[in-house]
Length: 121
Picture 1: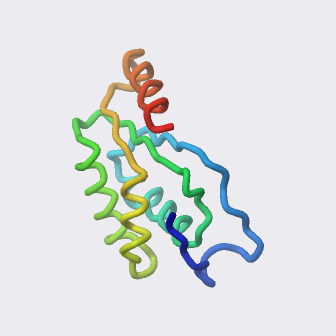
Picture 2: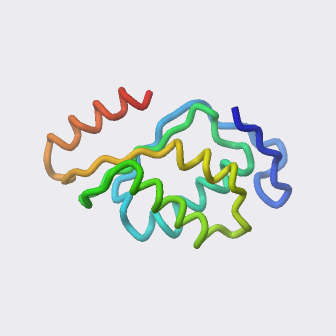
């Protein structure tokens, strides 16, 4: 279990850690995810506001493996984090992310997403 000290410049005093959950990001290979969502998730993790039972399933059209997606997450944290990245927090977050390639208009993508969510849970 990763224990991270609260970043005084981060979360509001009295903020509570989120309950266990899985977040799905549609368009996970895109610019918004890279520039905004990943750094925001990193900041939440650094402030110890994400449950230790947290995961992200990224869904996009681009063909990519889990490891390739994790590399993109690492690069996004390094490039767009508002503070110097903490290696332990970054590595923990990278282990929490998974990737699924698929077309948003095809029902097979949602069936595969359902299976991915069961596996991650």
